[in-house]
Image (cartoon, rainbow, N blue to C red):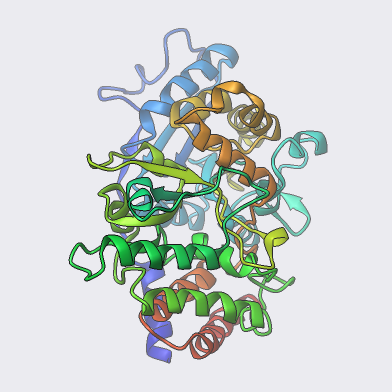
Length: 443
């Protein structure tokens, strides 16, 4: 047991550092100032993830902000896995060279507890905070204070292979959040379709695939949809929480899905997504971003709202959360940093970001626009409408705990064990033992 715990701790800590910068080649002390920048003007420094993907989307936003305010924002985007150790190194050194950090929303509590970021209630009014969808406010808060405003949020969609379903003579009901398929119906449908389109298994057709099957981000929605919590109200308790009847039912559902062969074992999130986009999967539960993927020729696909458990239709829960902003506790420009974050989360910068990146909005007004605007009635924007509805109505944030990193590592390992055939009750018991050990340091 101790060996496994130490392995998990080591896995959380090991990474290397790389980054891409908004500073263009050739920038120096004189050329780093944009034309017209006043000597001694405010320059903010921001570090976040998205290396190789976000630079071109962020640059026009910071340029626009400079034009409007005279405040220059320099930023560095790190490759996802490399961002966390780079940021931790800066924070542990109490460096004042970083003013704004990217916050993966379930890490808000941990960063607040460690003193990395400052509460922003003095810079965001209650009215402004309430402009965000509730799940984003919850995940951006800790101990009664608001620390991290969101860039955007995320949601999940049920995608289906229309060609296979038509071949099997099955039609999916019209999209309606109040008349969802149930998970039980989904399993029966998948079994039926596989039996008709791939009876001997020669084609390697999968029935049901979760894009992020090994991640709490996606799989916590199952016990949540049975009315269960992910962690105790103190943010550190798991015994009596993740070994309840609902949790056991949810994890048994996952176990049986893999044991039956409907879901493939041993795949990464990218590989899981590819099983659908290549035409090898009947149902995929995946992010709204899947709709923008490249699909193989030769099949048609559709999409609808995520399922509910039978008898729990009023408790349906969907995954949510994304990147937020935090003001470093070591910044000497707290007010200026908070103002830029407001621009990026509530102002024109957020509009530009959503348009450029195609993300699900975390602002209630933007969500309402997606739901009501006729231009979101047709594909591909109709995918965003489903995601926006879920974000505003069924989204459940990941556990709010200063020990989220440890919690998530143990939970993800437990999910893999269950998917590989471990008894759900025993696996959850082991998960509790490991989580208790790792969380002890926070009590």
